[in-house]
Length: 321
View 1 (cartoon, rainbow, N blue to C red):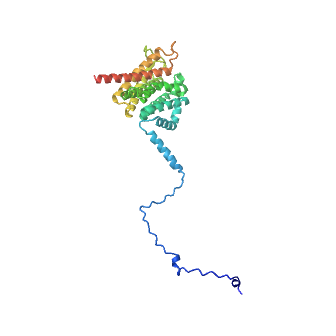
View 2: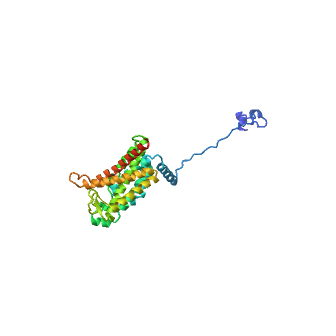
View 3: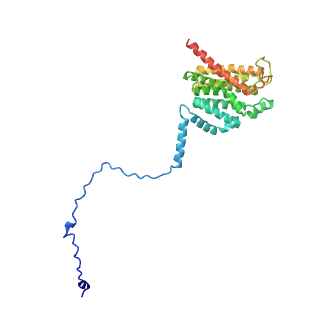
């Protein structure tokens, strides 16, 4: 007998089929589609490192944008000078000592900040011509004992002595001393100071190299070449042409106009005569040992700058009277 019969266990009823018992599984209505307007695609963000060439291109582009900024800023002035000094290092080393290069960098930065690229180009023209003419017949001048020290390489004292008046005009321009009405005068004084110094340098170096007869400006006595306060016809003409050339560069760069260029040339020649008189009468004399070449340079370029400003003021006063 079966075990289930003995235990009186009934088997479970069979599981109802899906077809016969649909009431247990009600049929749901189909889902209603919901329209989605303008579905936006899902963006997948991935962290990507910038390519090296892209970074360099962005840096270079930003640097050139800064350099071209107008008006100039301290940042653009420093960056521009750094780039130019690196590219022009062979020329700078030939004309300046290391400390002289540092002083020239400060001068270039100040000039760019005050007068922009055109002012910087004017100073660069002065430096290139002045360095080149100093090297003329260097062996002959060394043999005669009238050559500049260190093969003509200028130190910081010479740089400052040659640019003191220009630096003052630059500061007056940056801080708008006297307002915008005076900014043109300070710009004129800046150009006149470098016309004066270039004229003085060229006349001195050409006179030492090619001057046939050298006269002491105070007595017109014939003296050896290289004597303080001495002038020669060759050197005087060369200095005049140098001031005309630099004034012309100032016109091309828009620093000054035609009448102002004439003022710069006249002021530079008056200042150079005054510098020669000071050199002949006072330099190396008892009580004036402090009056060395750098101090005389400061006086010389200051006179050229001041004379130019005064002449322009007098000219404008006569025009409006």
